[in-house]
Amino acid sequence: MQTKQILVVEDHAPLRAAIQMLLEREGYRVTTAADGNDGILAMTAVLPDLIVADIGMPGMNGYEFYESVRAKPAWNTIPFVFLTARAEREDILKGKSLGAEEYLTKPLDPEELLVVVRARLARSESIRVNMEAELDVLKSHIVAALSHELRTPLTWIMAYTELVVQYVRDLPPEQLQEFLSHVMEGGERITRLADDLLLLIRLDEGQLAQNFQQVAEVRNDLRAILDGAVLPYEKRCSERDLTLRLEVDEHLPAVRINEEIFIDALGRLVDNAIKFTREPGKAVTVQARAVEEGVEIRVIDEGTGIASEEVPHLFQRFRQIDRDKVEQQGVGLGLAIAQGLARLHGGEIEAESVLGVGSTFTMRLPAAGS
Image 1 (cartoon, one colour):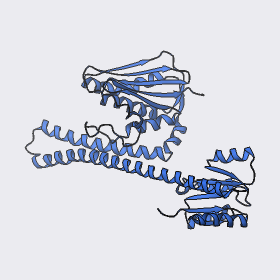
Image 2 (cartoon, helix red, strand yellow):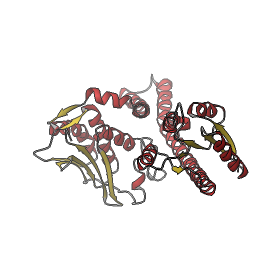
Image 3 (cartoon, one colour):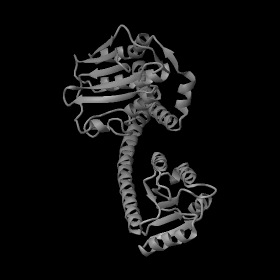
C-alpha cells in the first residue's frame, strides 16, 4: 500500500516539529505549514491524504483554512483533524458543524493522535474503495444503457433509410410512409435521450434551480394543472387497453411550482406506470390529496411490480430493473430526473412496490409559505 501523505498546519514551531517526527516515525510522509495560507500553498505542491490543523493560528485561522480547502472540489473529501488549546464547548461544536472529523485538544497525547490518524485514514480508504466500486458499477450501467439506447434507434434509421433510398421508385405510398415513420421514431428516441442528458446537466450545474426561482409562482389551481398533465397519456392508455384515472381532492392547498418543471416530473411518473403495466384491462391512477405538510400526489399502477431489494435503487441514474430480461426504452434517467425536479419544489418522491402486484410513486410538495 502506498505510504500516506499528511499535512500538518501548526503555527507553534516546536509542536509542529514534534508532530512531524511522531508521524514520520510511524511511516507517514509529512509536509508542514506554519499557517493556513502556507497550508494552501503546500497542498498545491503535494496533495495530502489527511490534514492535521491547529485552530488558533495568525492570519488564516484553522476554520478559515478548513473552509478554503473544502471550497475546492478536488480537495473536498480530504479528512481533517482539528487541534486546539481550548476545550470550550462552543469551539468543539463549531468544528463539528463545519464537518471536521476529529477535534483534539492540547496538550496532545501522542498515542491519541496516532489512533485518530490511523482511524481517519482507514475510514477514508474504505470510502474511496467503495466509491470506486460504485463508480465501476455505474460505468457498466451507463455503457450498457447508452449502447443499447443509441444502437437500436440508429439501426432503425439506417435500415429504413437504406430501404427508402434503394427502392424509393418501387415503394407504394403507404409503405414509404411506414418506413419514414420508423425513421422518425428512431430520431425521436435519440432526441429524448439527448434532451434527458442535457436536462441532467442543467440540474447538476444549478441552471434549473435558477430557472425555478425566476419562474415559480404560487398556484391554487392544481386540479387544472393535473388535468393538463395527465390528459396527453389518455391515448396511449387507450391503445394499450388500460384505464387512466385522475382522482383529486376538492380542496387542495396552494403550492409554489414551476408549471413546466412540475408537469415534466409528474409525466415521468405516469409514463413509467404505463410502461410497466403490460396486462390489458389494468389501471393507472393519479391521486392528489391534501396532507398536513401540503399536497401528496400518488401515481399507482397495477403492473409488474418491483422486488423489495431493488426499490432503494430506483432513483439511481442509469439504473434499470431487469433490463436484461425486458425490453425498455430509455437509459434509466427518468425517475432520477423526476426526483431532481421534485426537489427543486422542496418536495420528494418515494416509491413502494409489491412484485407482481404493482407500484406506487408518491410526490410530496410543501404548501406555499410552509
